[in-house]
Amino acid sequence: MPFHSRSTRWLTLAVVATLAVGLTACPDSTTTTTTTSPTTAMSPSSPSGTPVSLSGLGATLPEPLYQTWFSAYKGKNPNIQVNYEGKGSGAGVKSFLNQEVDFGATDAPLSAEERAKFPAERGKILQLPMTGGIVVFAYNLDGVDNLKLSRATYCGIVDGTIKTWNDPKIAKDNAGATLPSTPITFIHRSDGSGTTYIFTSHIAEACPNWKAGAGKSVAWPTGVGGKGNPGVTALVKQTPGSIGYTEYAYVKTEALKSAILENKAGKFVEPTPEAASKALEGAAVPEDFAILVPDPAAADAYPIVGVTWLLVYEKYPDAAKADALKGLVKWALSDEGKTYAVDLGYLPLSNDIATRVASTIDTIQVAAK
Image (cartoon, rainbow, N blue to C red; front, top):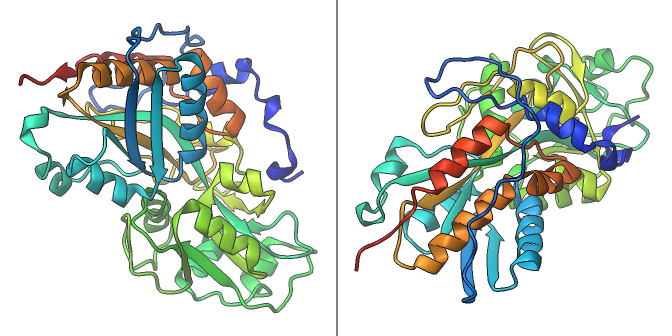
């Protein structure tokens, strides 16, 4: 049964405990696997009774979860309003470095060049992982409900060398399926995108003939661009014969079909939270939390998975905003916050990493005036 037809309610809190093993704390950047117990609720710092408004901008990959989190948090703390715009990781990084927002959001860790532009008066950059996301190949092809794509096949679709749905490579992957001669329309992002960073980081590892490299923006050899994960998802839904990369939550919401991909171990794997969590098991976690797993080796791992980060200043001029942001992040990473992530198909952080992030957010200071 394709994943998009399943209810996410089968992901119980017991599964949260299983997924929590996925991202394992590893301060010295070595790879290890640690079993953790289910996360206990962390007590957020008590927000003051003063109305506080926080503004954020950036990645669209986590936007469904962020909007859900921020709305739920306001329900618990009516005095705190969080306004978030999903405009892509590139826009999020730019707005953060320009001090136009209280926090940025990105699915690609900051580069050395970006870090060099950080305003010194704001202290240090706090790059905080919040959740893991699944990047899927959504497709629009009538009569084909369980499309399988080998690595060679999806590499050919992305680089434009496979042009029609009845190409022999696709037919070999899908014995018995009736594949039309319809031209393939590949849909990619048109904006600076952390989802593109996750996707192209995998393509660069998996596809020997890929020449465009990896990054938030690349020179695509083929295809049509859409703005944001919502734009790509909409274009796939509207365009018969199309296929494009987007985040799992968008495909689930729009009831689109997604491909079953061959992983590094040579196994075809459906895009499910369970399979994605295996991609992150034992991942190295450096001091700056720049967790990268472009082509996971685990036998049952879904191959295209990434982490998304909040970008936070170490120093804030407003004590109320600093306290509100601390409380929000700690609550999002608590057991209660994780249930929202699971329901939407995201991957909660491990207990160890959530604790490290909570300690890091506590280093926020009020800037001297």
